[in-house]
Image (cartoon, rainbow, N blue to C red; front, side):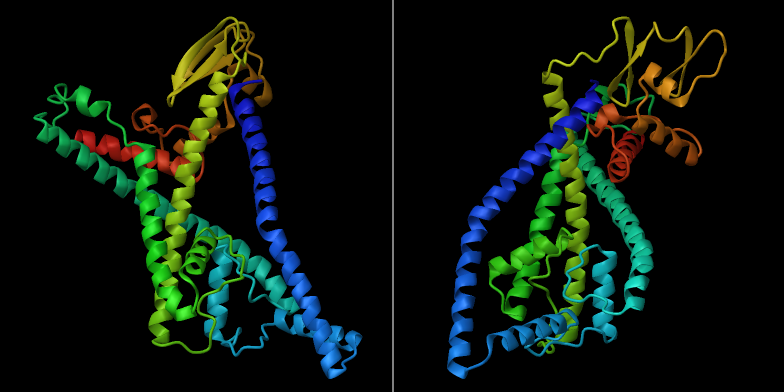
Length: 389
């Protein structure tokens, strides 16, 4: 079993264990409350039928009809209309952001069919927006962290020059510098907490929620979990209603972007932890007659016994048989230990008109596709750009 497969299996096992532990804890916390609520409801139902001499079957029929009306947006309390323009705009916002509170859902067949196509395009575009936001926030953080690092060097008496010919003097101090993923996680975590606390200060008096309920809503909404048990801006009237609805939208947008970025940073740390754990495990994934090449900070193993000749192109060892016969993609990947992530990176570099120079060994962010690749590229580019300015 190679390192990637071992890391995948370990992650799957840890996630399963995490789910089992979470289920046990939530069951212990919430199940007694559910049983008490069930007993209380049964008691209230019996008292009501006895006091008003109502047939229990007829009452159950009425309650089921109310559940159907509740799904269409009808509530006992007076709430704002669900499907006027402002209500529909709030709904599509929860759709494309993948929050999906569930307090409003399409009831017509046409609405359900339209939602499938609308959500397909809208969710994809919003994920792209989140990735672009992540790219810019990581760029900004990398520049700020490097500026702070250069300032500390100046205060320590180490000169920072702009010319590449003169840069040999500070090569040890700046060339080896890398923005730490832990600092990025700390900054994004603090920003997320500040946004959540500020939003909770607004939600608590406006929605008549406790501060803990407000913080709970912020996490559920910002993380796009969207249970729907607490939903903001649903009452018919508020003090300073337009300002509150605008502030609500801004807080949700900022919170979702920050939490999305934070999740990606945490996933990098989890990946690094898994790599460290796998490195401690006795896994024999190396060929007996292999040689190692460093690619983006990782070690690539090539078995000499599997290829008779080869060439190094763009940091990838490409093998071919001396007979000249073509080999399959699967055979090529097995013989050269080329990962899918590396092939995807090469395709991405080709789409951007040429490969970019790799500096993964400098920034501590190695590997990853999608949002993780965005973080890698931006940290690499900003570190290099600032170094040569």
